[in-house]
Structure formats: structure tokens, C-alpha cells
Length: 521
Image (cartoon, rainbow, N blue to C red):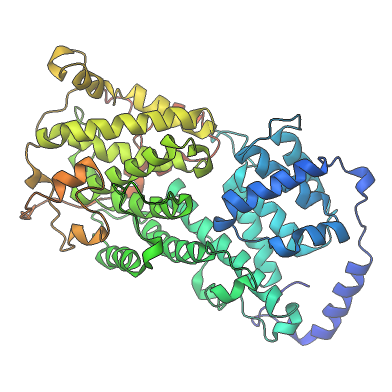
């Protein structure tokens, strides 16, 4: 039954609309399995396994204990095809199967023709469409992750998932309410992170919601330790959403969001020991895919906060990166090195190209500082390899590959690798009025101790950490230096609009940057 708030008059007619909803639901047409093209059972099992192994920590909207029983009692072609879409995208089976586009089209038709009458199953299914984006950003279309996230949010609000029920029995009991909370907070976190990535406005207003934060109680009898990863990810995405909202304000002189920076720092310091960024140099440590993935949006947000776009000029299109941005980007590189070494980069999803792109932009600063250049160049080479790998998995990566190549971002890296930039007269200029020559130029004047972002990073974490954490930094005051200015505009202005034609995930690559046509290096 749909949710109605107290601001209208419909609450006066609650007995009437409850009866109408009940009668209409009983009269709904059930979809016949004979009319659906479903994958064989062994493939269905594989797709479910893929979801629980690689996607569940970030989208815990299905319960392993009851899923197969539910599908046996009341098979849902919509949910089965949505799981098949996800499984084919994330870990495609070797045996013959339909293409992801087929599964998506089947599921989309089933959804739009109301063939599934369980609203929770409908919502669960379209939330799995997040792993599909068939078209580029040049078109306004209804197949993108951003579109389906918006549809799912409206659907969830229509069901009242954003509100605490007056009586938990009205929604099916404590277990169902726990599931509803997990669904809602998945949508909340996903929308916040995607808005930051794509430079889009936020949809959910927290002031409209009174559902409590997700907790371990909402996972019922599940003892999966990854539930805690989800809880801390939701908290992080809440902060990221506020950062995104701050950056999107069209201000002439944007003030550095010290309070938000302190929230990020507080999040990093609040992590339990098993979710902390591990000692990357410890050979005995266990590779934990989900813990490492948890830290990528945190590090990327720190990087974005510590870029100085006012330093740009025609011979230097890249922003200056302060110490926190450089070290965050190097930590991102170290995480990607682990995923590349294990052949698991595909499980990071399409958003991984955004993490890589932001990190590369920050690390280009190191090529202007002699003591950082070698370690920085090695990090950039690793991230370039990651981009090339991601390009074969997620078409959205093409925009970064093409954009960085067009801006000749890697030429100086190759020249240094081959024996110095001087040997390559065609290498882009890395010196000029804003060129820096010492670590003092990386210092941050806004009163936030940059080292506090990295409570678990040591000199052994990565090459740049060994340099940056070992060097004494005495902040110098940058008198007339503004912070980001209009950050959204700068991020929209680095990659050319022609690059965006290739990108089906970052629909409006406004999230990361373009340079004006007249600027060339």
C-alpha cells in the first residue's frame, strides 16, 4: 500500500484507501513463467552467487537465507532477469548465455508492464539495474544508473521507506522493516556517491526522513561480517553528499568546508580496527576486497577537497594538488595495485574509473617537484594500467583514456621513464609561473592538519607516503589564494565534451573536468 504523509487530507480516508489497495492487489495479473525467457537454474545459481560475493556489501537488499525459498514458492521473472543482468556484467559465465542487454530489456519490460505485483521485489529488481548503463551522456535517456536510482528513490518514497512506520506490524514485522531500512539506506548512499561523481543535485532531503540509521539489527539472523562495511559506507556517503552539495554552490569565493573536512577525519578515526586501511607493506595481511573498496570514496573525496583550481593557466591546465590530495591519490594507487595484482579490478565497478581519474589529476602535481617525481611517476603508470584494464570492462573509462591522451598528460611520464623530459622536446610543459620546486608549496593554509586524514597510513604504505610523512612541513600562508572557487564549473571544464560522448556511466562528465578549446599544451 502506498504511503501518504500528514500534509494532505488523505489520512482522513485511511480505511477506504486501504480497502481499495487490497482489492486492486488481489486483482493483479500474475506473470506466467511460460511467458518469460529465464536462464537455466545453474546460471541462476551463478548469478546469485556473484551478487552475494561481490555486490551484497554495497547493496544488501536480498537475504540469502530466504531468497531461494522465495523464488521456489513464487518465482519472479523480473528479479531473476535483474540478477542475470548483474551477474553477466560483474562476472560473466563462460558457458553460453544471453547477453546483458537481453536480460535488461526483459526485466525493464516486466517492470514497466507491471508484471510483478510485489512492490518490494520490484524495488529490489530495479536497484540491480545500477550495474547497467548502455548509452552515452550525449543523450538524455532512461537506461542510466542515475535514472534508475531516481526511479527507485521515488518508488521507495511511495512505499514510505523513508519514514518510520507508526506500527511495525503494518509493514510485515521487524524483519521486513529491517529489509526496508537496508533498501532505503542503500538508495541514500548510492545517490550521494553518484551525485558527487557526476556533479548532480541531491534528490533525498534528510529533513523529509525520520527512518533511523541502518544497524546490525536490520540484518536479522545474518552473521555476515560485511554488514558492518555497509553501515560505515552509508555514513561516509552521507558526508560525501554534504561535500557534493557544498561544491555545487555557485559561489565566487567558496570557503573551505572545514566542518565537512573534520567530519571526514572523524569517520576515518571512528573505524573499528578490522575496517581500517591495512598496513599495505605487511606481507602476512589478508587481502580484503571490501575493506579496500570502502576507502576509495573516502580518499577520492579528500583528494577533491585539496585541489587548487585557481592555479590553472594556458600552459598548466591541471590544478595544484596539496599534500593531502597527493597522499590520498597515492593511497588510491596502492589499493589499485593490489586489485591489479590479483586480477580483481573488474569487481570495483564502473565508478572505479572516477577514482582513477581524480587520483591521476592530483599525482600530476608530483611531476613538478623533484623529490616526488619518481615515486609519483610510478603511481601514475600504475593508474594508467588500471585505466587500460577498466576500458575493456566498462565503456565509461574511455572518456578518461581519451581525455588524458588528448591533453598529453602522460607524455612527461614516459619521457622521465625513458631518461628525462629533456630528451623529449614534445613533452608538455611542467614548469611556469605556477611550477613548484619544494614540498613547502604543497602545504595547506586552512587550519586542518592534513596528516589527520591518514590515521593508519605509514611511511611503508606507498612510496610517496615515505617521502611526505618523513618531511617536516611548516605551513606558509597563501595570502590571496582562493580555495576551489566554483568547484563544479572547474570539474566540468577539464575533459572535452567530445570525450563525454563515449561515456555511458558518468553521464554528465561534468563531475571531473574539461579544458577550454583554446587551451592546448
